[in-house]
Amino acid sequence: MADDGFKVDLGALESAAEGINATLNDLQTKKVSDIGGKDSDFGHGDLADTVSDFCDRWELGVENLAKDAQVVSGRLNKSVEAYLATDKSLKGELDGILTGSGTDPGVR
Image (cartoon, rainbow, N blue to C red; front, side):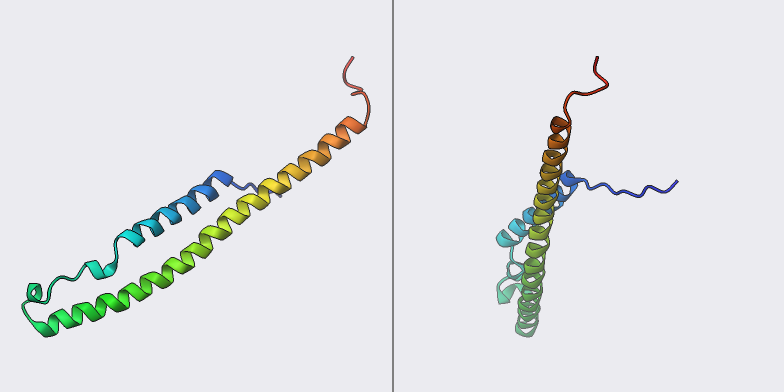
């Protein structure tokens, strides 16, 4: 039998946003440019230049991914807020219906 409804695990959405934010924090402390070393570590100036150029371009890519990840994290958090607000609103409406209908006929 097909289930017509759906469920949202708000804790999972929050955990996903927290995980993204933790990764972003790690990226702030560990830059791609830290991979390279002194030119003498590479044993050849052209190799050192190539590694430096690669790390610079890689860092730009990581920065772009980080910006996208910030957007995703923000949207996950907004989704959680929207679900909670909707639940609160619906609960208030249902509470009003129940209290406004008088005595519960099932209670004796």
